[in-house]
Image 1 (cartoon, rainbow, N blue to C red):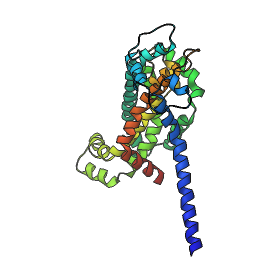
Image 2 (cartoon, helix red, strand yellow; image 1 turned 180 degrees about the vertical axis):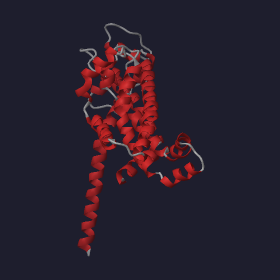
Image 3 (cartoon, rainbow, N blue to C red; image 1 turned 90 degrees about the vertical axis):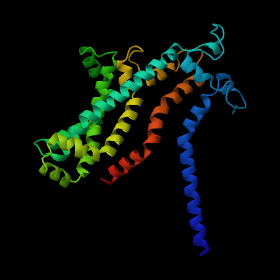
Image 4 (spheres, one colour; image 1 turned 120 degrees about the vertical axis):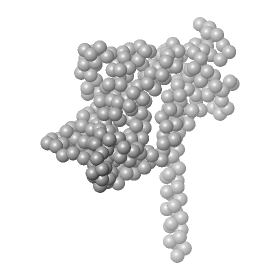
Length: 301
């Protein structure tokens, strides 16, 4: 009996240890990024490592949003006062990133919801082929179509425009939205729709008053995931955006790395990284109940 109990305690202890190591492995990069964002280069490379943040601790965040060092004017011979020019673009490109994210979500849900409902409720020739085709399109790596995509956008005059980025990202996210929402619409009892039709409800009003309200959790989950994916999109904005008028935060953050060969401000770069992950993280925390519910429903089906 004592041997069995000891074996159970050992297995439980090993599971706790494995979970702790896995959690540390996942969280360490975020913890290091957050801690580094509060320190200057000199403090990051000093030995022994410094735990206390820089003084003032918000110096890197002040530089990100104010475009200059806190309490210091630029001096050509003093690297610590230098600000990469791209940092001055950050307030503008953050607005661009939000605009691209919300517009892509609006178009993806607006086009994907009716399409998903049609796939869930109607039978037509080639339905399986079309549905499978959307999945094949979604599985194609974006790198494989970048050149033809650039040529097409150039022919349409959509290079260096937010509209061009939104159009491409919507096309990429639409298959995902259709597949997710199709599962939600399929789960809605058909008897509810039949009863509404008997009471004289048109197909459009049926969709607006009966189907969509019941599919709100699925719409929210899809919208959040599309926004988070769009917010993190890098290759498409990198190829299509040429100036700060259409660049997104991810592109500018990448441009900061190695922007100046002789001096790379790691604290400043990490501050930009923290700023870039806050919006999707806040959304995930606010709507975590819907996200978990959607993931479990998708797994069960």
